[in-house]
Length: 290
View 1 (cartoon, rainbow, N blue to C red):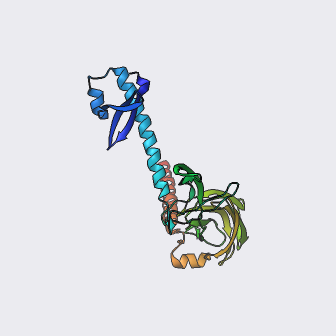
View 2 (cartoon, rainbow, N blue to C red):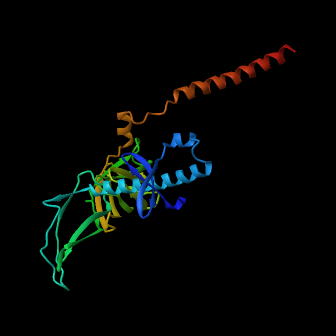
View 3 (cartoon, helix red, strand yellow):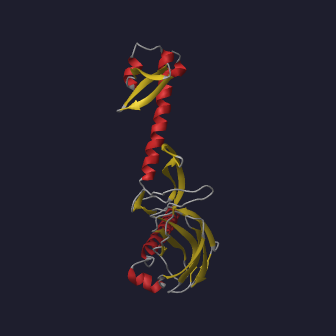
C-alpha cells in the first residue's frame, strides 16, 4: 500500500492511520505520541518526518475547526434555530429569517455563521439532499468617548508648560484615524495646533500634548476631535475643558514654587571677599618686613 493511500484523522483524542482496500476503509495503526514517535524504532527517519508533517497539517485543520466553532458561539438564536418550508415552486424563492443576539463578551468584527439546508425531491420524497455553507455577519460596536485635561504641576501665568488632552475609549470597538485640533483660550501655543493620535483600542486611552505659555488663571482647552469608528464612519467631537493656572503669588503661597534663597550666596560672597582681603593684607605685611 503506497503512502499516498494512507489517511490520518483524529479519533477519541488519538491520531489513527487508515487506508483504502477494495474501496473500503481499513484500520492500519494508531500513531504514537510525538515523544514516543521520535523514540520509536518501527519507522525510518524519513517515515517519521512524513508522519509528523501529516500530524502538523491535521493539527492546523483541527485548530481552524475549533476557532470556527468558537466563532459560531458568539451569537445566540432567539427562538428556534430551524425553519420548515413546505415546498418551493420552480423559479420561485422563499425566505427563512432568524433573530440573532450577540453575546455580551463578543469582540466586534466579521464572523462566518454556518448553515445546513436539507431538502427532498418533489417527485420522490425518499431522495433527500443536504447542502452546507456560511453567511457573513458583522458585529459592530457603539462608540463611547470621554475626555479629560491635564497640565504640568507648575502651571503658572507667564511660564511655559504642557497641556494634555486625554481621549478615553470606553466603547467596545477600536477608533481610528484620530486627530486633535485645539483653539487656544487663555494660553499661547508654542507648538502646532493639530496632532494626529492614530488609533485607540477599546477600553484604552491616549493623549495629545501641546507646548504653551499660560496667560490667564482660568483658561479653556477647546478642541475638535475627528475620528473613524469601527465601521469606518467619520465622526467629530468638540470639547471645552477648563483648567486651573496659578499666579506667581498663589504658587508661592501654596508651596508650588519657592522663593529663591539668596542668603547662602551672600555668605559665600562675603567669604570670598574676606579671603582676598586677607591675602592682600598678608602680602603687604611680608613686604614691610623685608
